Length: 196
Image 1 (cartoon, rainbow, N blue to C red):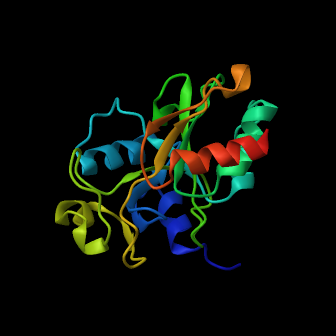
Image 2: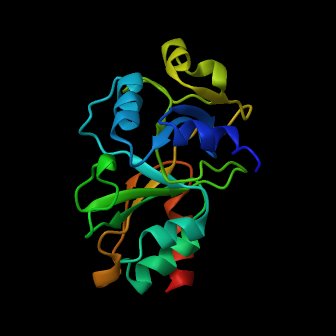
């Protein structure tokens, strides 16, 4: 039997990894491991109550993990992801409680040739309130010293994901940009019109 890829192995044993995604460098840990989630938050010096995105490494994995999404929302997710977007989706079943967010769950799908073997909590690899890291060298030294694995993907675009709130999409078609980032609102609008 072959060994799991390094990222999957580290995440499976409760580690925290530093990886370049499609926007900036990020920290990730098993989305269902409380000890790993605590380490991730402590490395970032971030308030534990602040919500964190859950990232999947394929669109199908995300759709399979969220079976309660309505047809309109599922179509929007399929039209928008993967890519440099975080979608705030209805979470009536309270899935991934370590991510916080209450009735909404932040979801990313990152298709970068890596797979952690499970959903991960994903947040930018900077100290709370600090600038995002475009290169591995820009990640604060104390964060780099505290992770179990680093994956250098070279220079990245450096703009964080655009956050789109789809919490009301199923009910009445409304959506909003919660944070401007790597994808323009006009691009999101075109994708959503095409998916309806």
